[in-house]
Length: 99
Image (cartoon, rainbow, N blue to C red; front, side, top):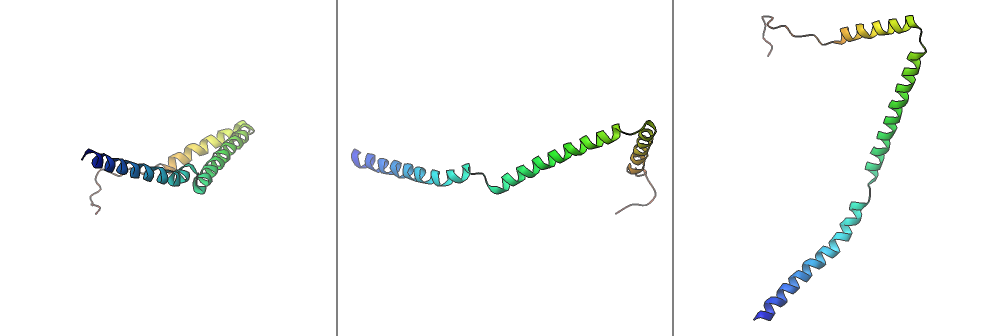
């Protein structure tokens, strides 16, 4: 009685091992392979990063070539733009209720 139980366990273990051995390489190759979309996304991120760096470099270079008066006007314009673009605060109670 001991031999059939042991034999069935060995067959079960062997079947599981074969399933694992034959299934892993089929999915493992796909897991190790980089798909084209992720490669393209990585390239676009690098290109965007390089473009941003070049833009900042050009902007700083342009600013450094300006005269003192121009720099002063640029600073004033920046302050005014920040003031005008600041969101308006809502009054505490205006008398009407928004639904």
